[in-house]
Length: 290
Image 1: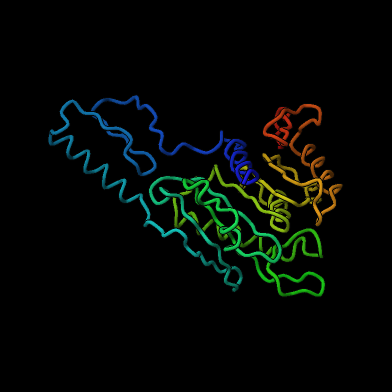
Image 2: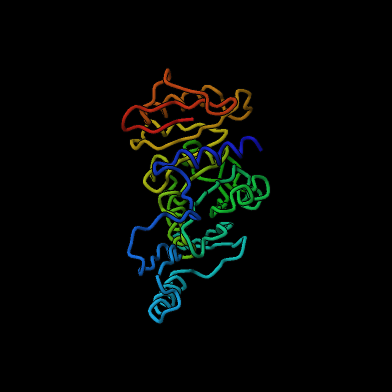
């Protein structure tokens, strides 16, 4: 649970636009008292010297119609979203943000590990319960060959000759984000990617190939040699264990070094962020690494 909460805290604080938007906050409006303001499909301010006058009622009616027009149908929690990628049906388990039908919500994509499923990820992490204001997406990987094994679900990664693999999973994420934009009101400034093991490896591949699509990344229990080819700094929370039995800790430490270089951070400039977590402070033009 501590790891999950650390991921959420980091993603909300590491965004290049200042973290999770407060969609319930109503900013002050400096406009004539007779003007009603509508933003993001939600009426933000009501002011009129004669609130029951015909003019005020007309303005109110128009504002309500505009808000209703901008709102999208309320999707159930969860929703199974199916998209077609080059003739192949791909799916994701989606928990729309509580107000995502009416106001932009942050988005978290969480990628399961090898042999996992989207339902397993939802049941184990429960990110949709920890952060109900966000639209939380658990994508489903395809059956992926690993040596002689071809019966488990996973993601393209830099091992097993599947680094590029025709980029079928990268294109799946592209389509998924497009479809989410059509089904929910999402904040494109606050889209995050996280995952563990094979799903964490895929997060690093997204950092390499789609850095502009995400505000921050949080890979867990993995490594990312492909970071050596990345060129766009992005905030990253990287979690790995000293006693990991799957990945050599030296690979994780090498990845950390590459992240610091990419994000223009110095190993000497660090501060305690949480118990067991260090934040590396970036130079100008860089991004933090935790």
